[in-house]
Amino acid sequence: MEAASAQAPCSSEAPGLLSNFMNLLLRIKEKLFTWNILKTIALGQMLSLCICGTAITSQYLAVKYKVNAPMLQSFINYCLLFFIYTTMLAFRPGNENLLHILKEKWWKYIFLGLADVEANYMIVKAYQFTTLTSVQLLDCFGIPVLMALSWFVLHARYRVIHFVAVAICLLGVGTMVGADILAGRDNNSGSDVLIGDVLVLLGASLYAISNVCEEYIVKKLTRVEFLGMVGLFGTFISGLQMILIEYQDIVKIQWNWKIALLFVAFALCMFCLYSFMPVVIKATSATSVNLGILTADLYSLFFGLFLFGYKFSGLYILSFSVIMVGFILYCSTPTRNAEPSESNVPQLTSYGFDNLGLKIEENIQEQNPAPM
Image (cartoon, rainbow, N blue to C red; front, side, top):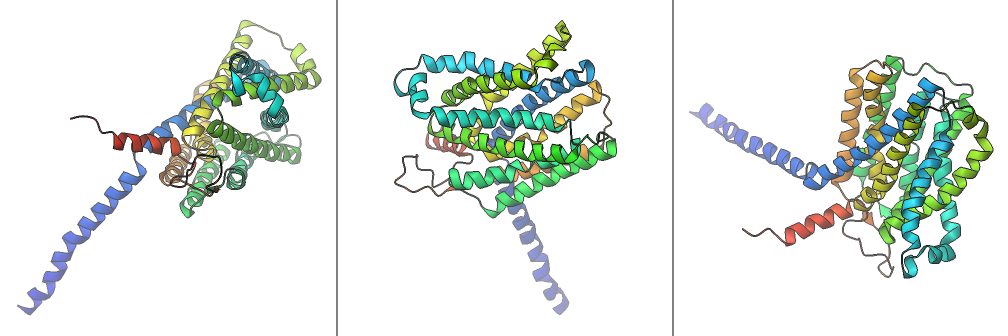
């Protein structure tokens, strides 16, 4: 009888432990798999597909037709932005008019346009000097730069889980690079690795500057102002640089309808990326967007299996899964905003900038339940 009574507490504790474990799983599910996070994932993957489109068309031009004119490709995109968004600014009234913006902030947008154009150019140019592995790894340098700039410029304050999530995403990138090496995609050693690596680091830093400026503008001003001014100064800067650097390469292009179609496809993918990214950044943040688009290389690989005969490795699936886990963790906890209360910026002290748009939408839905 004593032995039976000694075992009774153990048998009664088992259901309690199981219940606690199930409650823990339920809380994790409710925190990590909300409708807002699922929308954030979907938005990020749409941007990744746009980047994949630009990568595939650029590689097809280089491999199939020996065309290497990155500035011409960027110039077409900036022209599209100019004709649509800069024109919209020109017809806006009051302080949102193009002339008023140029009068007040022209030098700021010259700096932004220069950073954006040169970031695109340096990353593409780096492939001529260094390896695919180096570009993929060093391009991630832009994420800590972006977080540092967000800390000082946007007053974002991160929690420990955000740094852990970024580390997990970077681990996923490392897994992808390892898969590339095993699959033999990293055969080209480049002509001057040091120059290529420096170009990647500079390009990643300029991308971070451009993304922070973009987040600042779309959240405090308007999306059309950002796209219109980038289109205006991007067209001017890229056009001038194209004439000075790529004129001879452009003259050598043997144009046909297939090459023209690839240029058009690249420009449309890039235009969609530029047009849609401010929407995603306004709803989330520049940092979460950059973490989400780390999967773009994997989409490019999947298309490359059919177009360029790439070898498949199970590590690619593992890499995608690791990146998505880190991305979900990052989005699960909003950042804080440390901006002073007397600032003209809308108060975001509860949720900060990260995922603010989605959180506001969730609160509105909770306050206005659907009628029974």
